[in-house]
Length: 133
Image (cartoon, rainbow, N blue to C red; front, side, top):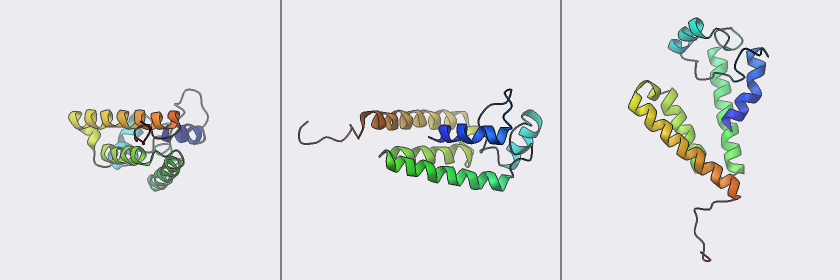
């Protein structure tokens, strides 16, 4: 869901130019990331001054609320919450800077995405046993 929301918001923040990726980079809101993006990816919203770090943080929180609302709608709250926790560990706690932590977080995220997609595709939670089976 976060990817879908990023695809919808991205073109507005990236200037609709075809040579730029159609997603936003909301995680590049920390000083070290901003400095790196100024050199390597100046088209991103924060280095190009289309979005401030505080606006990016606010948008990040609102997107998380929207994702939780969609998780409630699709009955995937446990996996949605776990995925948001993993996102926080990866980006805010610098879990992405340690190779072992990065791989573990990414593996857990893939499991959360797969289980959440299974629930949505199944139309309910197939992991709960009932009296019939």
